[in-house]
Length: 402
Image (cartoon, rainbow, N blue to C red; front, side):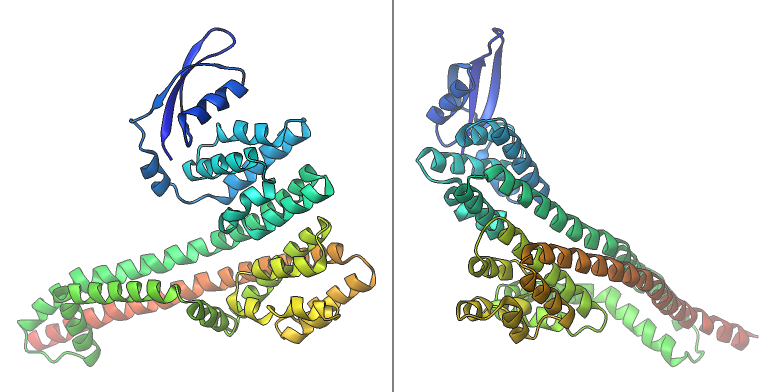
């Protein structure tokens, strides 16, 4: 989608040049004329390569989606039509890919499609939960309220993800720094000691001989290690495209002793929060469960719960259907049963999501607290062992020299 350079005259008589992303020059003209501006000229902006910009800015961040919906809700509450709101927001969006999506959505809405239908081709970016919230708001006549609930949901999910990432940042940096230190020792420091020890006939300890041989081989055959790492990365990328690979990896995650509860409860929290949002928006239980299951990030849990909608369609309750999967703990099943018996399932699901979010937050903080000293101690012992293996022969050489 190309850029167009438009010269427009404002109400105060000031002439401005604006570069916008659009499908055609006529669309640019309509966009500015709808804002009450006089369009003087429209031409292609060859200084900006639109296609290259789309490829470089392909990712749409969660905060961009949240900000777009906040502006859309504000304009809808102010009484602006949907199409007018979309076009006004699109002109201010900085993310090139998001602007392209909103331009296409505006075009579909202009043709007569509903907003949920226009966003449906972009479910991988905006998620099925978003399109379902739009559909519920359109059918119930309360689109701003439905979008407001989705914004709260998206904020909570984004905060949970960012909390997990920030908690694991320091241990990751610590591990990477330790590997860099070991690489420097193995490639630059130890090989020099190996050349120094060759001039003496003193017998070296086995650990020293092993480390010297490994360091010498690594410094001379570093390209072999680089080729192996590159091959492993390529193999991992190819395997990742296979659905079964993700399923087995996620299943393996749920067998890790301490991490199992973190992955399980974070997936359960996202499932319950999504299902509660959809039920609160007025979507029937049968349709909500299918969308909520797909929102779970763990492929093993998704496959375990894929038959839940069928069981509900056959007349079973949600709690009994979830109990069949064997993926949910007893506490979660009891909370779902309480919500069903009290006719407040959406509220109980929200409380359950908050409960498991707090548990995951506490366990992550505990895990990080344990990882930091363990990594420091282990890497310290490794580096100390390498240095001792290098320096111990020096004392033997001094003794022989005497």
